[in-house]
Length: 537
Image 1 (cartoon, rainbow, N blue to C red):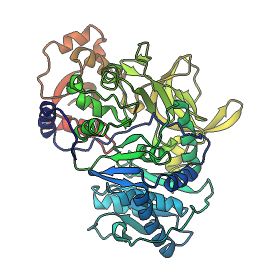
Image 2: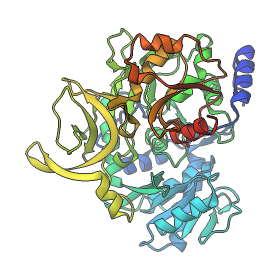
Image 3: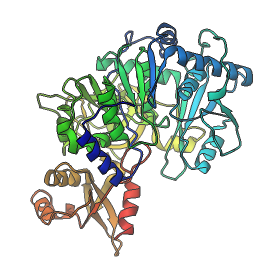
Image 4: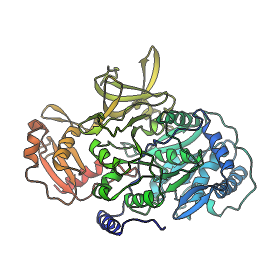
């Protein structure tokens, strides 16, 4: 690709990237720019209409190649023909290896056109993990746009070599209760949890995004940087394709922040969704970056520091910047907060608010006894509404652990427990405080580790930090502070933190870690970081 970038900046970023090693930084993005031309339009009808309307326009930019909607439709038709010839109408769920190829996205459209759903699998995941997911999901067929060596107990279909076929016409009518996709997320027991999302769940999400009031049209160029196993990917390609825009993907074998920086400038992207880790990585080069074409930018998946957002806003001078939030169980994102360039942004401990609910989603905070708390309280965030999944795939026990029914607004309402500790202000805006399991009991006091991290950032500047609850040799819980970077730890850090925090909140151990381990979604993997920290103690 001939993506222009200042040579000195590119060389510095490459040097830093080599030091950090190639690693996936998929970005959890929650899309800001999603206002449908007709917000109530059915998402699947909108996709079908867009495919037929925008023949010669660019649909995808993948690995330096541009593909038109006509070329995309041709690959969809080839796969629809195979699906119709080889699968019964009752076989609804089909596996899909998430390669960065046109045929991969054509598989999704072909499955939806035939009234089916997809189960995405990461090509680079351990074969045993993928086999376990396939078995639990009961999938018989696996689609792949590349050669796949691992045999497994399934039928592998190479979609990239399927012959062209005549058009099969309109999408097959499907009930709103039919599945759109099933995502397996990591579970605390080590066994992935399947989250089934229906067509009506997806439709509710699409309609909810209209409140962001940002349109996407045929002239837009949208970023899709996520693994298909991460649900923000759905937002990235669906909102673009249903409006005739061009989806720009990020290869899996690159250093993603560097590639994205090049892509945003070289291709003049207009819409982007990312996890905050991406701009944390790029922060040292903000003074040399400017993306005037970017009109909307959404962050999701991690807590978003307000100071980092303010610095990034200078790089995207014309963009509306959103902080969005939502678990996989509640179909992508369900809250949004618009960054105010003039100041006055809501924050707590330096973390920007995730805002109020979107669409028909209902948000409440509860105490440990699942009693709904009033505004001005801290508690566990619980969600309800049309975006909420029915429960985990063939797993009633896990479903019962996170779903409960209580009276809300005068009627019984089913809620999902997110496990996230939040604060709700008097205007119903939510501020994310951290995971409930990131609270620690230190010397009898309940400590929010996010507050420790906040003051560490205040004194250290623009660096990534993580406060962890760890056990010492006597079995007592204490606080460990990890600082991302080569070090050394500033000599006066602890003394400065003592001026802001009580003694029981002061870290007992501080260590620099050259690079924090990341999960497949691009978030810091705290469990892996804790293991790494303890192994070097």
